[in-house]
Amino acid sequence: MLLMFQAAELYQQSAEQGHGRAQYNLATLYLHGGGGLQQDTDKALGLLQQAAAQGVMQAQSFLGVYWTMEPHRDMFTASQHFTSAAQQKHMSSQYHLGVCYERGWGVERDVTRAVELYMSAAAAGHTQAAHNLAVLQRGTMEGVCG
Image (cartoon, rainbow, N blue to C red):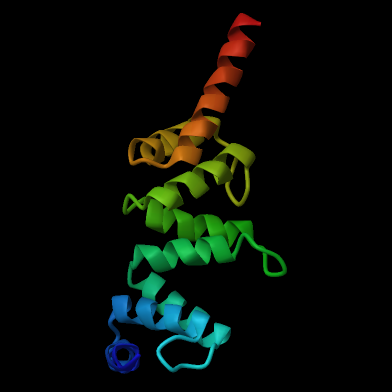
């Protein structure tokens, strides 16, 4: 337990100096109330935004997922965060961005781009991306053959 308190203190110091990874780690402690910190979602989101702006792909992905949920759903903002993380080869963000392109959520619908993203995520081991890719390919084949 003492180590968690020390970690929180070190993350706080580093986050104040602008270190993106420390901002992300501190945000996760605020989200769950770890390291002796009180749970504070607003503070966590602020830190996640700072980390995302510095290119921390885990923060970008987290914010992407956050913006897909009610009551604050904003698919345009979500797709922007997923795009930033997917450009860094973040597997889960590639999948989520693929869903955005497949359904036209926050971006113009582009099934070809969705397939590309699903392929990248599936190649990295994302099973749901592989499933979505198979469904899209099966639908394409049925359209050609049916």
